[in-house]
Amino acid sequence: MQLEGKRVVVIGAGSGIGRSVAVAASEAGASVVLAGRKRESLEATAALMKGRREVRVLDASEETQVAAFFEEVGSFDHLVSTASQGASGPLTGMGADAIQRAFAAKLWAPVFLVKHAAPRIAQDGSFTFFSGFRAGRPAVGTSITSLVNGGLEAFTKAMAVELAPVRLNAISPGVVDSGSFWDRLGTEARERLFTDYAKKVPARRVGRPEDLASATLFAMTNPFLTGTVISVDGGGLLM
Image 1 (cartoon, helix red, strand yellow):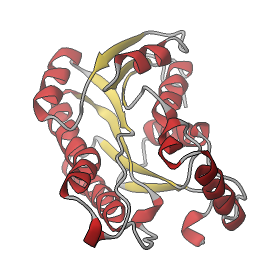
Image 2 (cartoon, one colour; image 1 turned 180 degrees about the vertical axis):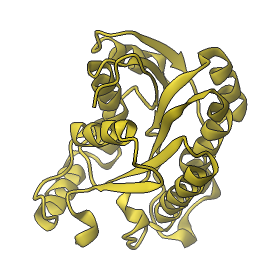
Image 3 (cartoon, one colour; image 1 turned 180 degrees about the horizontal axis):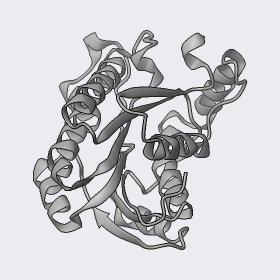
């Protein structure tokens, strides 16, 4: 899974899975463009890397920003986006703003990224997006999460046909201990969630960012993999 001489754009590189993907791509020899909303977090990721890298602030849910971003970045080989925004709870009590934020991160951002990046990506390049196991295993209170993840997976498959031979794939993680993403729950609720998940899934643990980074490098470098959703969930879909 070597990426020597390749240029990789990582959206969401400031923390968690995105940071792990960026570091792994750099270790595999890639020149990495680190993108996300917070420069400070991106600079922290850059400090972990030894290879060529550049930091660019971007809100991928804003089309004007995405268009300008790729005008500046120019040609590249692979793009990975871990952009995500949760929306949980009963639909009848959910505000429109929360729903719109989930749509922006998981649907509009991928649409804008593909639209403006496609003219600049190498013909043997790839896009890799992150959905989630709730696309295939809904639960009470996950209607919007299930909707946007399922929509992203369908979009990925459709664009794999439309943009061929450029490849598009999706990674579908389960519960991953990705750091600050879970801070909103509080320490006690977070640990309870992790413990419950680990008891139920066949892997008997929650995921780690490096688990997802490894799968992402596989998706980027396997030339016969396209239009596929790769479940990296410890067996979460079997629960």
